[in-house]
Image (cartoon, rainbow, N blue to C red):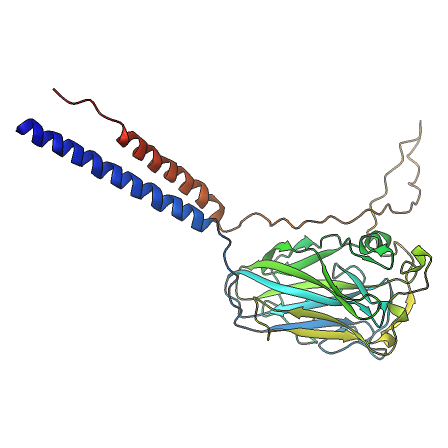
Length: 346
């Protein structure tokens, strides 16, 4: 009788152990799956404000650019700044959208670094997009705009990017940019069309400041490089074209729009005019004398660096899935071990 009771106790104990091990493993596997899901963007509860740089006024402009306050050549870069306030700390998304063509002519053909042509103070007092972090902004970081392979009238935007040679990065203060999508084009390039980037970023506090530039299409490239007529930003007439920010965290009402009139476009820059100048390579020393002065040279221009891969996590969350995976494996090992038949005690 006693042996039978002890046997039942042993069987019952093994069953409880198997049940606990199975439950432990299932719970940990479920937790592992959950933490690997991307965190949703947090709802934006504050304001967004977009400024552009008026080159004649030498000031940020919360309104539109025209021949009275600005002069920009084809191939120039219009700086933009976007102040976003009252954010929850964490992940957010926003769209940068611009007119690629206006009335059938190329307008902003791609996005560039905000300070590639002019270098305005990002905390300048005019305009409306004055960040609450000003006047002492934290250290900035930047992320490359992806290369745009879109083809219009026989020429690719990527070739226009190389032709200009300008740097193409989105800058942020108060956070980090984790990804930028490839440009999505819509509409007919022989009429009015747009391009759109989806930007994902993480804020470290309640405010971020974003800055970028709109590159004015060059007629020396569009479309003369393919044997067509001049078709750059200086050929747009009548209506203006626009730069927009849309859908902060999916909130459709949080949109901004700034335009530039054709009267603000005067002249054209030559190719590579704004390309970063690499340091000159010194010539080897002359035998028995001082090294000669390095000769001047034309900068070699290559495609800007691009990436759509999210940057490394900064909040320590990346280590959690690995820990949970280890614990899940340990739980499964307990379950397997308890299912083995143990020899009866004599």
